[in-house]
Length: 281
Image (cartoon, rainbow, N blue to C red; front, side):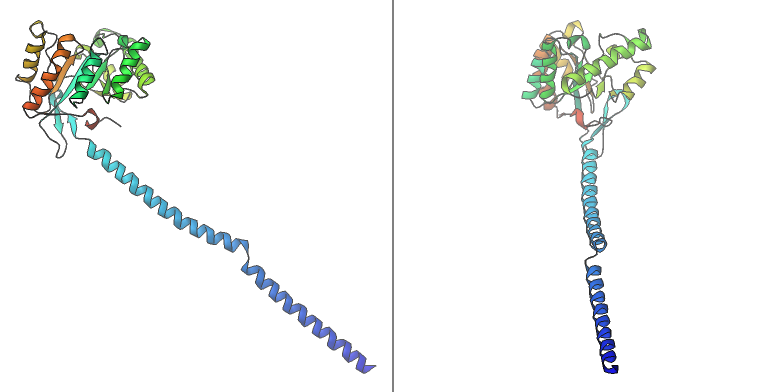
């Protein structure tokens, strides 16, 4: 009887020991496969990848910022002349054409395109009312030319109310945006007459306000291509940074090629409007 009791007790001890060992092995296996441990390791890897991505993005942003700064080569100075920024060529002028797109703007744009001559076309709202006129504006823009705002009806802003000034300016910006997909980046007031209200409105609408250094095509003695081309290239106001004013007129269109070639013969570069300080891309 005693021998049987001893045998039973020994058997129980062996069984308990085996269960304990199996428990330790099971616990060890679960710890190695703990999902929390795997998830944390993945998070660490993602963190490293995120840091690398952020570094790349930061470098790309820095390169883009540097490129944008490098593209700004000129800024408006006194009497609406442009000053070079950094090492930009000071011997350069800006071409601008008002009252677009009336009868000859498209021809003028094609002439400038052939000459690889950049310019700003300042548009009046009453010239972009029909589908045909809007198509002309879009074609000029698609050729790479900057589009400016020259008010809706060419009104003198100092002689109308603030509400009317807003209508004159914002209507054109809205229409231009509808046609070409972006708002004008430049503004020129008719007759060069700005008010305090219009200046603030133009600034808030994201446009750079400018007038001009000189122009002649509205004077009777220059309403022919030859005399106009001559005076635009040979006058006391032509100097570094000049802001040249021209209009959508027959004689100006006919003189345009000679004007561009005459300026270049005198050593002048033509300012790309996209490189003007204060204009976002």
